[in-house]
Image 1 (cartoon, one colour):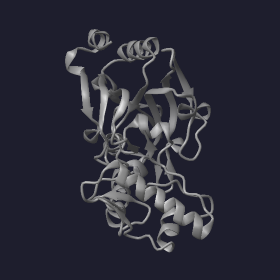
Image 2: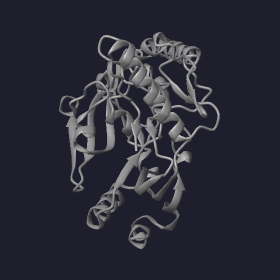
Image 3: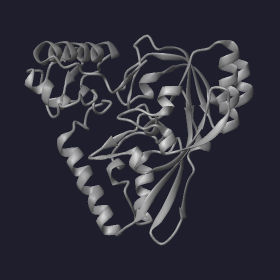
Amino acid sequence: MIQKFIAVLGEKNVKENEPMSLHTTFRTGGCADLFLIVDTISALKNVLKICADEGIKHYLVGNGSNLLISDDGYKGVIIKLGKGFFDITVDSLNNSESVIKAGAGVLLSKVARVALDNSLAGFEFAAGIPGTVGGAIVMNAGAYGGEMKDVVKSVTVMDANGDIKTLSCDEMQFEYRNSIVKKEGLYVLETEFLLSRGNKNEIEDKMNELCAKRREKQPLEYPSAGSTFKRPEGYFAGKLIEDAGLRGYRCGGACVSDKHCGFVVNDNNATTADILAVINYVQETVYDKFGVKLEPEVKIL
């Protein structure tokens, strides 16, 4: 099986027993049986076929910024998109709008920088989100009043059979932290963002303002996965956690952030088990006190 992957990807792109703590922003997680770096669409198609033929469990990761992997590791294949998914281009549609086309492996911060360089407005909210385009599309990532659905023109995806199609924004079925990609197990290849021409100085000021707000209010100095819980309808997760008296609550090397109670952070060599223990205790306590079920935003493998 390993030789089949090497034949498709080359030996340097097939790694055995790769520590997943190197590939998640929580900096925790055991080893993946196999870690594959896929540089082309055709290689991705072949890898998925091998996994299907061999009955191998697999999971595609982006920047690992919304991912929590067991201390026991991942018993299967982790796929990471490589250099063939890093392309980014800008096409002007008219005097007022342009399209940025970005591969699934491109960081959102890179898209934001390209938007700024081309005086394109609308992507400012995403400048500080530490994820890739692919990961952001899967979960309709958002911040400060903006979401991917607000700026997406189309998304090119591959299904489990290797068939490729391009979906419009409406066809993506974007919801709060959800999309058709997540629902149907599709793989994002490329996204077109439709942005409006704006004033470069104003765009930069907005990005700087939001990034400053992020630094001020979020515990960026510690490994985490951003907001740990989804926003419950009618409430704010951080406020519920604070009101439950859980600010600073700790288990091992993980704790509820003193700076923002919506964040569980790794502040002292935490294990995934530590983080999960904090998450579970927070969920139980908030439910007991307020009758509100907090659902993790972070994906747990």
